[in-house]
Structure formats: structure tokens, C-alpha cells
Image (tube, rainbow, N blue to C red; front, side, top):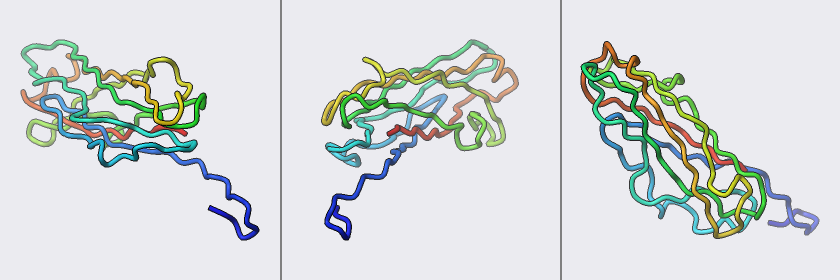
Length: 161
């Protein structure tokens, strides 16, 4: 895009965000690859994914108090080579990383570990992606007094730049 003087306008940095479901029982569809740009051809990195993405902890049953761990991956990249990419994960729908389930009033706390990007955080270049992995954990003590069943939350992931 050109300015009034005919010079190219500088690109404004932006962040791209996606929602990620966290489910204790079943993983719902997050987004389809068709909804994402094929190539950014610029400085902003993008997500790329196919199929279902989420953290599946299984049925939470207080009669079997074990720590449950689940891992999910997405692809990130398609931006100017060697830019430092970062992925932030928000606190979920209630702002405190809790899953709701049971009778609709039961809340179970979970945690998300740091996001790691295979090959490092330096952007791989346009039309090239790297795998980003993150892990969620539910401590057995977090559901000791909960109703058996499925619990869910939704997380917002933000990739920068």
C-alpha cells in the first residue's frame, strides 16, 4: 500500500490469535486449515493446522486421583526468516485456567507448561513452518471432590509477530 507521497507504507505489527479447546473428555474441532492464509509473504507469522487440536485429559474420576497430562501441537511460521516467534497462551474462559463440567458448577484447575518450538523460536521463512508443542496438566487433587465426567475450557493462543 502506498502513502499519499507515493512511498510504501510500513507494515504495522500484528498478532494472530486462535482459540484452543481444552477438554477432559473429548476434543472439539479448533479450526480448519482453509480458514488460514496459505502464505503470509510478510513479517507476521501464522498458525497452520488440520483436523482436531486440543488437550484431551480423559474422564476425570475422583475415585482414581492421578495426575493427567495431555500434549497438543500446532504449526507456526510462514513469516520473515529469523524473526523471533513467540506463542502466548491465555488463562481460559474464566480467566483462571479452570475447566467447567459436572453439574455446570464444578470447576477443576489445570496448568499449561511453556510452549516449545521445534528448531527454536527463529522464524523459518515464508511458506515454512515449525511445530509448536504445549502440555497441560491436571493434578489428581484438583478433582478429588468433583463429579465424575467431562470438563472443558477454551484457550486463546497468540503468535507474535
